[in-house]
Image 1 (cartoon, helix red, strand yellow):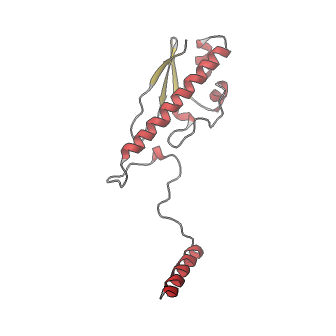
Image 2 (image 1 turned 30 degrees about the vertical axis):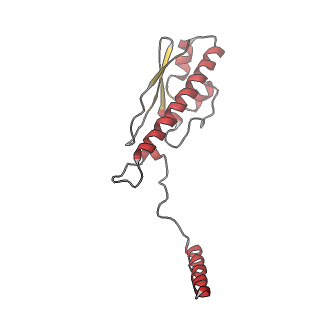
Image 3 (image 1 turned 180 degrees about the vertical axis):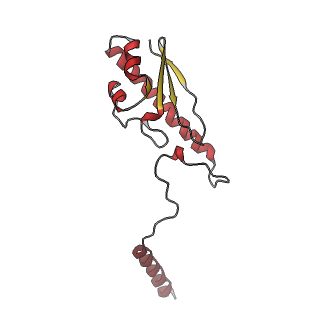
Length: 144
């Protein structure tokens, strides 16, 4: 009996490997933020919303730091910095901040989802495209 059960398990494992055990639960391509939230969910969505906020706010801090460094490098000219990197971010603008094209790419947001709006000596950073998972409020940081 014990050998028969072992043989059955071995046979099932072999059959699974030969047929390609593709899981039905694979994540869709792209960002998780773009996938619709389904109800009822087997997982509480509060954790996902918290993860969305955590990723965005962490990148707000990274951008603020890089903006201060870029401002120091250009002699404190906020107008020039605003002209160079204001608006939606892209690889060129990230390069001017001393960052790589994919440095802000995470599970929920890509670099192009972040927008910089300059006003006086402050910058407002916003992570756009919240999808159905909630919205992360913009944050304003002083640069000088």
